[in-house]
Length: 203
Image: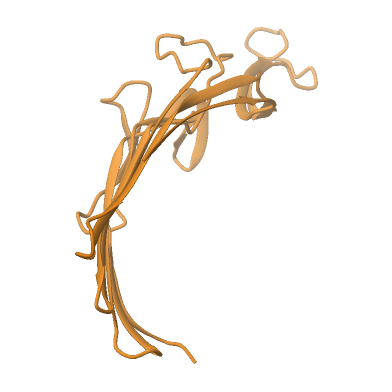
């Protein structure tokens, strides 16, 4: 087992920035004043610090063939997203989430089976929401937490021939996004289960 602490100072994040500005002195005919446009573009964000803990544990139960690998990562940043800050100029680290992985396995007498569970907590994806196939405004988009379970198995028939079967997303997990608040559902992605049966031949 191992427990690690990490800290990273990151500069020049590429983020989606939004600001209101005039363009080429275009006049708003309703006011006679320069028209104000909301412009979204990629910009360099402020510096940020990311730190956290990672715990990893690997164990084999004697010569039984059974064992497991497990790890969990807990992360934090000095630039978290504040849901109560509705200003368009706010900055927060995107893509940051706690995560955990567990793999239980049996590997003995030319037969192997692995069951893997991969979990990731909710995280901020971007500023701006995709609506009608276009990015809209500076409201946040969050990806909901997800848990995917995969199963793989194989049997070594000969030194050259191996038969395998793979089942991905066996629980038919969906991925979804929401806006500033949890009840503002934006998108749901259903990738379904995927199965693969095959043979490997090694010369």
